[in-house]
Image (tube, chains in turn purple, yellow):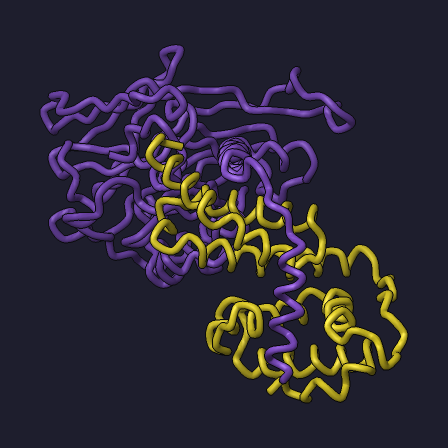
Length: 300
Length: 166
């Protein structure tokens, strides 16, 4: 009796619903707007910079502790993740804020693996600490960390491109996995424009060229590389509304090329973004959201 | 969104929107709130279309249930003042179904959702637990409490509502 009563009552309620027009188009527009907002927030940390005092390690010199200058034990045949020392694992945990993988909205990202699956892949010293890339077989996270704290909540991203043949199953001598801007440890309005990727064993040196002629040499460890150029938040002249006073934004620093050289300084390969938007920022989710068009070069 | 993805997403929405808006309405009891709820769920679905296109309807429904319960939590933090339900007074000629409809709309969203999943969607308890992110035991206790609350809201229904909804 109860089951049928409920069914009848709910059915009667449901019949009052009127059709809604344009749902698909509105949903696509909303999804696109949200994705752009998330990418912008991830790239610049704008909201944090405007409204929230960050807990960062002030000042500080370059971290040059030898144990972290190169993650230990290269991966077998360059196909997997490196073994880490205890110090390196501690840095990896710090990069993840000692928690499991979570998404940008705080949701569980167990699809990336558990916390124990993550290794320090590559790192380079910066003022106040280190820039680091930490990853599992399924995804990675970037951070600027003092070893105890980092400047932004960790954002976990799946490895872009094909997963056939393991992490180094791609065809070219190198590939780019992410272009981001990360809040620096050295000051609330300072940023690192960062490029990370993977390289085959033949690649021993990598140079990145940003627009305006800036160049940077990447740290290459275990087939993973990271490069950065410093940048700074700037006043947002286009901001409007009650919160616009004092609003800051990040300048766009486009990546023009990433070139890998062998031990004899012969250029083996130059990667260039084919899609204008990915020059300034890219999250691997763009590869699979079914929305981003044209397909970013980094998805290949 | 690529053209092919946009077309397949639009085709899915066109084919299933009538059923989905009905579910949204049952959850919210209001046309505008139902459109809002469905709109948000579809936006999430569009964002993950590459991953969910094998079973997009399940994803949309799950998103709606989760969002409806979450929204209610936010509202509860904002205001603890609940509007008293406008229920008809008891009487022999009161239509039981209308009374039940009104009482259902007066339920908190989580309690209503568990009844919707169970009696409107005809889902097994294990699936309800999965969608709502709780144990089967919690599903049972929520169902029991929802029905108990209905009996309080509409005493005339008491004789027709078994304690555990059997």
